[in-house]
Image (cartoon, rainbow, N blue to C red; front, side, top):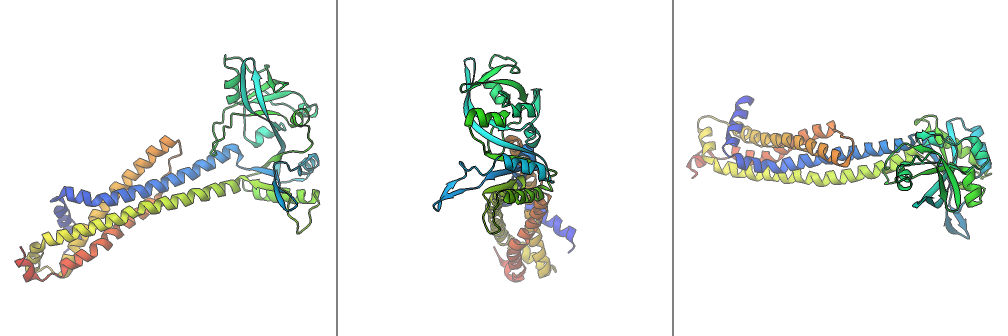
Length: 406
C-alpha cells in the first residue's frame, strides 16, 4: 500500500469521529502551544533585559568600594572609603580601554519648589556622566568642569522630578529648587528614559557636580563609586581588568591580598539576569512539556479504542490480502496524522499567544525557529511512539477471530 493511500484512508477514518479526533489532539495542541509560548517569552525576556541594560550603557563599568572587615566582622561596603580623588586621577590618566570616567556620590534630600516637594536624592557626578549612562538633554545645558571646580549650586533634573515640582507647567530652566536648606539652580532637563528592567525609575534623577555633593552636602573627600565607559562592549572585560590592575597598584594591595574594591561590567549583570531567566524558562518549558506526554497517552488510548471498534474491518482487510505490515502502517499513520495536525494547530496557537503576551508585557516579539522545528519533530515522534503499540496489536489480530468479532 503506498503512502498516499495510507494518508487518504487515515484521514477518512479520523473524519468519521471529528469530535473525538479533536479531543484527542487537544493534549498535543496545549503541550506544543505551551512550549512555544514559554520559549518565546523566555527569549523575549532575555532580549528585553539586554535592551534595558543597553539603555543604561552597554559598555558601562561600575567600580565600587569593597566590603570592610573589622575584627573578623563584615561591616559591608556602604561606609567604605577606598575610592578617592587620587584613584580618579590615576584612572583618568592611565586607562586605555576607557573613554570616560565619572565619580559618583549621592545624598538623600527633600526637593522643594514653591509649595511642591519631591522626596528623592541627588547624584554628584562629572559632566561626562551623561555619555556614560546614555542620558540626553531635552532642554538647557549640562554643568561644566568649571562648575565642578567651584562647587557651583547647579543641577540637571529628570522628567519625574519636573512633573512633581513644576505642576503648573513652569519652565524648569532657570528656576531655583531647594535641596534641604541649599538652593540649586536648574540649568538642564533630561529626556525621559522610563523604567529600567530592575524596576528603577530612570527619570527620578537630579544630577549635580560631584564636588558640590561632597563639600556642601556630605563633607567627605571620598567617592561612593565610579562609573566608566569602555571603548566598546567587546572590550569591557579588558577595561575592567585594566581598572583592577591600576587600583591594586594605587592601593598597594599585595599579590595574595583581596581587593578593597569591586569592578563590575554590564556583561556580568546581563549574564546573571539571563541565567535566572533561562532557568525559569527551562523549568516552565519542562512543566509545559508534560502536556505532550498526556496528549501522547490520550492518542494511545484512542487508538486502542479504534482498534477494538474496527476489529471486523481489520479482519476483512486481511481476508482480501492485506498483510500485517499494511494494517500496522494504516493505524500508525492515523496516530501520526493526529499528532501532526495537533502540533500544527499548537504551533499557530503558541505563536499567537506569544505575540499577544509580548504586546501586553511590552516585550519584543521573538520567534524561536528551533522550538518550532523541535515541536514538529516531537509531534512526529509522539505519534509514532504512542501509536506503535496499538498499531502492532491491530496487525497481530487473527483474521478469522477478527471477522467473527461482534
